[in-house]
Image (tube, rainbow, N blue to C red; front, side, top):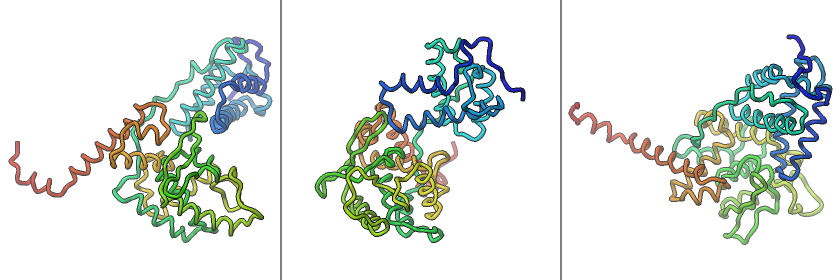
Length: 338
């Protein structure tokens, strides 16, 4: 493939891409993006920059705005799409579209090359809870025993993580951001303080069954990772074997391993993984009589429409479950053909 050359339609094409990205981040500071949003944006910028650099036969640090031709950016996204999910491609597209819009406004680009890159159609937003009645209970019981093949099993920590996801509905990033002091309140009236998307905060009520599990985990943590004094309130709640805050990859590995150990990996919708536990929480809240407003507040949704999807999905699941009643088969056998 011939390395792309600076486009004739690009103004000031010799401006380093790294400088342009730095200027874009400064311009976004008033938005107060959360650390998770910032990290995701930087990953998306780096992913496409690496592909542009490979095509241009240079290092990412040597990229200039002249390399942002429609053809080059389109080819980079085509390569990115090979091993990424639709949602990841859409997020990356939005990141680069915002960056290029900024560069056009700053008169550093003559036009936005993202206009020539197709954006994936929105994926189905139907909830994807764990399939099968009793699956969450099977999962919890299995996690409590710990995988026999683990090199350094820590079932108390794993159970606390999976249980927190199942009974609070927090997102992956929200769980990773939890601190020791975020579990507050008197026994029996405790709640989990959660920092959600856009730094929006909410409190999720929790029962003593969860706090007991977390307390057991924290005791084993003190034994594994002895400290001269009590953990500070701002210490990460969930950590790895070295006492460092769990990462996104570690959390995904932990949950995937839990599914396989419990033998329920085939009951997880494709692309759900950790999020399947959040969806399970929401559908169970609805099944217990929760309203769309209550789901919205518990999950930290911005829109009531998003929460309403769980009510619709639960109604469909209930009808499907009812239709599976064996008595229907006998009834159909007695019914005359239409």
